[in-house]
Length: 368
Image (tube, rainbow, N blue to C red; front, side):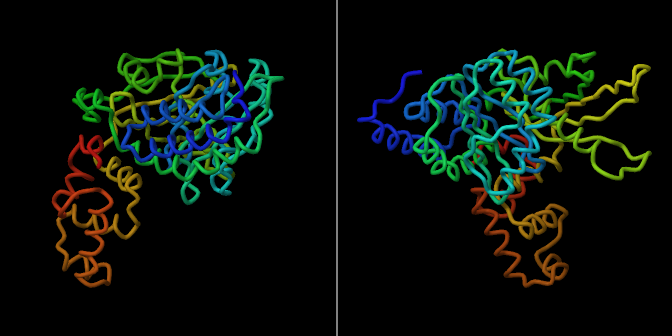
């Protein structure tokens, strides 16, 4: 890591800010945007390793990571042990509290980083309205130069732009992804993979193997996708919540987008303990359904609850008059909600709006 000369530091920070901000509004897909941000930020804040992740904002856990300089052993332990047990809840709490830039990590994450010589870190927590859209972690070697106030100010200024950029990028597939068919299901079914208590694969079927490959990031040499760590984190939170009934199923779910552009639903549940008292985690993975995708896209496009309700009723075939009567509003107000949703989605007219949100499986890759 080469420090930026003091005489040119101010210029480097200005250029890094301007370049990273432009990237956030350039219409890039999620993978390309994170690669661009890593490159542009590093011009002013050089690092030895970095990890840039996107999240499922509905449940607040990470689903995919782009990393550089992070050892594979670090990645595996973080995804399967440290993140589900300790870091997921910390990141969600930071997003809800409005903290955008911090050096705070769990003691377990700090110990893991120091074992791999990466004991200095700085995090950006991109959030909007308390919803976590991802995380950026910059790391430097233990004993090296720490992050200073100028580094923190740069990330703090970028935080709101990166949050909006992450949200918009999740709606887009790269040109290569679009050529492969985006998130069309192609008749694919559900895959199953079983993990033991230490996150090791006990068994998996061929369908799951294909989905896991799509969800992973081969640039990291990753064995376990971030999305798996995320759904296991949700499962552990569910399992530990107070007062569940004995017959209540303990499961969890999240949505994640693969490199192909396809959206997936991952669901995790606990199997019955074996003779040694160890309970395996069963994860099912399958292409997201139309109704579930509609709710996800509505969130990503930033539609309000009332706009979502009007859209759901339109999709059921209700007329503006029927919707107005059911919601206690005027027909003109119904049209105002439709017009507002069209503006956010980037289409004209209710037919195009319904096609984009509910019926067009490839629409997410064409967002304006």
